[in-house]
Image (cartoon, rainbow, N blue to C red; front, side):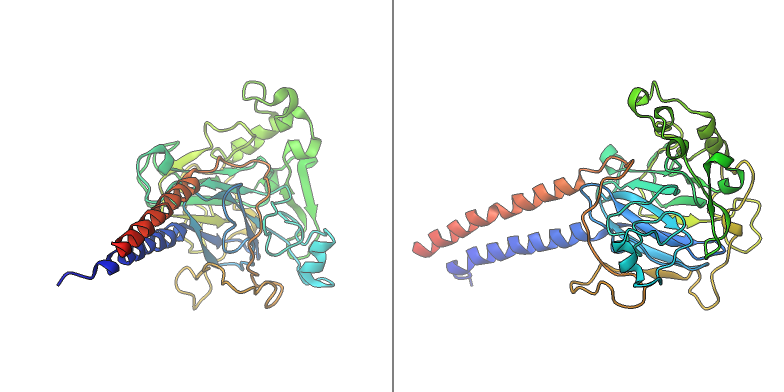
Length: 383
């Protein structure tokens, strides 16, 4: 039996609404994940910063003990930075919130305004950065479907880091979805005038970071600014050459694109801090980098630590999207506090993807169908 005519239009409206709901849920689903691993001998505090036009991730800062890994999902088109802080203490008088309000640094390196959750604040140099712009949903061979990623020493160096894309098949700088990073301990070979010395408070004493020449001296020649603001005028310097020799695949200065930016269509990235270079691993941790080896063969931050007994292999913890209710500040000072803050402009960020604007256009196209369907429904009712 044919359905009553008055049912047909509402059914069409419901169908379109269902399509909109399905599209919305699929567009908000994570298209990529970052597994952040700590192979250092000490605790680190990884942090994330979203680029302009993309949302902050589910967590923007957390504690990661030796041997632990955390998996953080990211939506299609996301761009941003990931780094690790060292020597942090969020247990001072008044806690992390009071320290942040006063503008006091809570970490020896990579601090983000004294907060555990950086919430849109970038790293205070020097800090080794992983930078990425994810492609569109589904991947593929088109230029808009590719991820662009690099490890940067433009803002200086505090820890060795390796970035490993998982899966893929697109071509990239250096051939395929290449591993990139810096496994050398630049703190040991850092020129004296660039050294940042720490006091033993969990981050160690001695040299805890190596500044860029731009930060150390502020001259246009080193900062690629003013009269040196183009690739033709800003050339490698003796200081950037030290970084490049130790870490051939990492950015050593602002226009070091040719050997430092890679492309891939990946479903996931492993970002490993203090990973031993090939040939020097004695801890049982599987190396994630095969080439190139660092100049000195050094393993930063005092070696590596295997996952603790009782963990599920890699000991990976999965972060889920933040709950709707506000639980910011719950728990101890070292527990993640969920928040979504507007992103701030960063010193150097990869170009953002157009995937988000494409999804918005698709949504509006579906919504524009609704008035036509409702008009058709009322017309049918009057007949």
